[in-house]
Structures are given as structure tokens and as C-alpha cells.
Length: 302
Ligand code: CP
Ligand code: NVA
Image 1 (cartoon, rainbow, N blue to C red):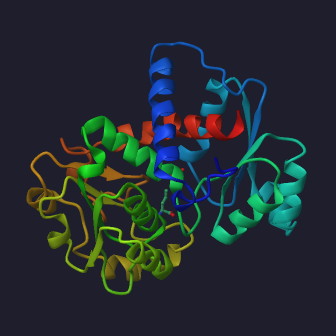
Image 2: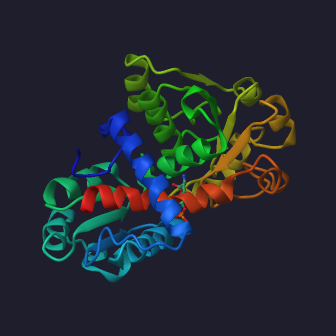
Image 3: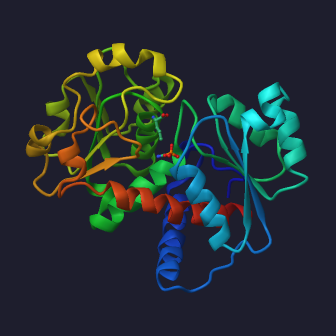
């Protein structure tokens, strides 16, 4: 078992499926009002260099429900924001807390933090990956569809941290993934190359309708991610046509489901009608961040 949860590609399918099994058990216990203090007396340090609603709240509430405690630490109010090296932060935190969740820009910084820490490190989003979100997404699909590994998945929009994570997931779980991005906004080249070399069933197109045709799961994300705010206007132009709307949903499987990690820019990458419509499972998806992250923390920090 790995010490850290930094990218799906570090984990085997069997170990990820064990996390899903534990998620199912913990979710049922929480719904039944049964205590499940798997991390009694433990503390999670949460380092944030970017904004968050879901990640911050779900990790903090998750630790509370597991009998532990979480500390919110933002870069602007800690020495991280004044340039203390990540390796020192990791070594110091290792002496106070039992696990670290970090949301930051560079994946390399998260890897360095993990190397320098003696405690588990969880990636709560980098520019490269958002692995906890992927776990929540796949768990949500498994709740709505019997055979999540046999479905056809479709990514529409930016080749960002979520798209990279979906490619990793397609490789690990063996499902078909079609990625539709505008030219110049493809996913990370290393991630694509590794998936191709390993025989992943991932295809790329600039045609969202070709990607969505007959797909079981449609998925998108904002056109400008955190850190790209000043590219917003140029991206709105480049991504025109890469919207999940009723026309796109109409060419997908009749019982398709629609995912979005949130926050969404309604009527940009997805219409209000689709988010509020019968195919959308985005709020189950958001809820499942809590349940899967509890399973991830319990797996790593017990
Ligand atoms: N999906 C997600 O990570 O949301 P937050 O940015 O609100 O944490
Ligand atoms: N791609 C988005 C995801 C937010 C949860 C971002 O990085 O801002």
C-alpha cells in the first residue's frame, strides 16, 4: 500500500477498488447515524494555496466524522506564503499531525512534500491532477450504473487537471474515454503518452459531438482553472462549441449521466438546464467527495 495519495497512476486498480468498498461501508454507516471513529485522536493538516469550498469542507467534516480533527492552513497566513521551503514545512508538520492534505499549483511540490514528510500526503488538487475528485466521480458513477468499468466516458472542454486525471483513470480501470478539446488545449502530453504506451482506450478529437455520441457519462469542467483567470476572455472564445447542453446530451446514450466537479460557470461549459436536468448527478458527486476522502484518509492514516 502506498504512503501517499498523489495521483491515480501511483495506485493499483485493486487498491483503488478497496477504497471504493470502504467508501460504501462508511457512507452507509454515516447515513444510518452509526459512529465510525476510525481516526480517533488523529489530526489532518490542510494546506491551501488555492481557493476551495468542497475540498476544504469535505476533508474537515470527514475528519470530524472519523473521530479526528482537521486544521485549515492557508498559504497567506502561514510561513509557506513567506517562502518557507516545502521540505521544511513537511518535516515540521510530520511532527505535529498525522496526515497532510495539500492544494497547490505544482505537482512536483506535492511530490516533494510527500518525500520530505514521514506522514501520508493527499493531493487535494494541483495544476496537473485532482485524484480525490476522480475517486468521487467514479464512485458516483458506480452508484448510478451497475458496471462502471464497461461504460464509455466522454470529456468535453479543457485538457486540464481533471482531464489528466480521467486519462489516468481510464488507464487504471480499462474503460473507454473520449476526450474532446479545442486545438491547443489538449491534456498533458506526458499523461497522454503514458496512457497510449500502456494501451489505454483513450481517443482525442476536436469534435465534441463525435466524442459524446452514444457515451454513457458526459463530463466537463470550467474553461479557465484556478491560476488561469487572466486567460478567461481568450478561453471563452476558444471553447465556444465545447459546452454540455441539451443538443450534446441528445446524441449521448439516452440514460447518460452528466458529471461536473464544480464549481461550474453556468451557460459557459455547461448549461443551467443540463445541471438542473434529469441527467445531472453533480450534487451526488459533490457529496461523494466526503465519503471517498474519508475512505482514503482511513486507508492511509489508520
Ligand atoms: N471540486 C472541487 O475540488 O471543489 P472546490 O474547489 O470547491 O474544493
Ligand atoms: N480545473 C479546476 C477544478 C476545480 C475544482 C481548477 O483547477 O480550477
